[in-house]
Image (cartoon, rainbow, N blue to C red; front, side, top):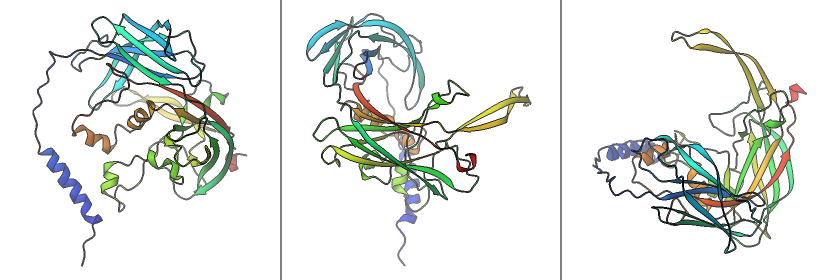
Length: 376
């Protein structure tokens, strides 16, 4: 009798882990020859002031909070090859970041322009600082896409269509309520090779009872549309094991895709969302635990139906690999495998430096969410 290939895959995975774990390698870190580089990060949008965060690279052994701060840098702005102005430093921000092993905070300087770039303009930012190589980055402001129409339909399933940790469905009827969205879109320019980002967020600012609620972006179910295939990010375990053990595709709160399937610069996107009702729970302290910390118990839960805002964003080519690499869950098994893999370079389009400077142009659509049937 033939043995199933799938049944042997868990053993192959265990063997792979044991093989990797058995490989010891001593790495000597040379900190004496470290030369800091200028770090620039910024995302431009049409008719908005340009803000660029500037800092310097540092070794992970440096523990000072000001290790990345660059006080005296000069940023020069060029539009379509013509020098326009010297950007002004307006503030210092504290940013948090995380790599594969460490989480840290650093101080960065924020520079702002007085000029608002227009669609189609080529923007170049040059940074100079004493003791550093001059760094520069270029990007073009993309033409915004167009949302021509949106059709929605509510459908019910007996199982969840998205299996993420966060959800707020409390299906008293035993069914999960979902919303299918078909959105007719067109690109702003002709030609292939354009990239886009799709997101959907709950407009929590329209919940009058509780102002200042945080934004919540919805996970997108994109399996029904081949245009999103390039954004599928299966983990290594999902590739190795496909017969039910740890099976299932992860879904994300954004989707990357290109216009390769568009015809005459148009396409109808097909995706679904779920858990689009906002649950707000109020808690009250009831005593303390054995360590003296208060115990909070829920006293009231309310459900709201704020509108959904769909963002269809054209992104510059510099941002596409950045978004591709940056949306993975750092706690996933794929990231765990990266911890024991060879080092890889961080994506950057800043010449002689580090960082990403790109541009976006967005179109938005509003979708009204009806109350649940038993709440009407």
